Length: 184
Image 1 (tube, rainbow, N blue to C red):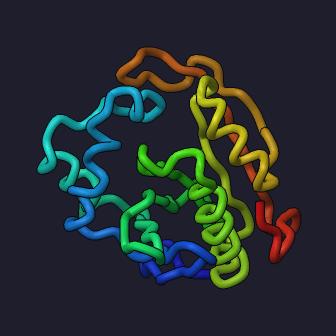
Image 2 (image 1 turned 180 degrees about the horizontal axis):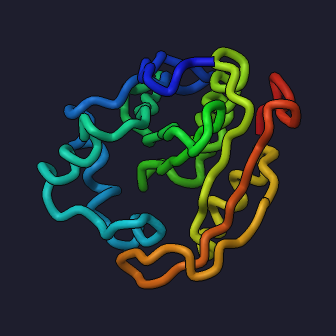
């Protein structure tokens, strides 16, 4: 397993997408999604109002996580952002994801998150992956359950965001529960 200090962001391939390290130049492609209040309703912060503020957030050098951009192989367009963030214990990572607004409902997140999960378990040896999801985010819950994650609990009134106090659902997947080659 990679050390928590190693922040290598390898390139991953799926049938339709290449996941590569997200760079500052990706901001313009993500801004339509991250500047839309409705698209950001389940994030811990409000939508972005300037490209510079989004670029700074996306590429913050002090953030200890890794961030991938999903690039459509057919046309080179950016289809989403996927992240892996160190958990409290070695061997555990938190996942996050957002699909570009114009690509939602096309299975982008299912394909890309499945590839990321496979890489993190198979190639990096993590023992557990988890996601904290706003309890009102039905699409994210459906995705993570489709990928085999189990609901581990509900943290009531756990996080204060731009929309107020939110309940958070915690979903986890252990390496031993993951089925190699399983795709949604």
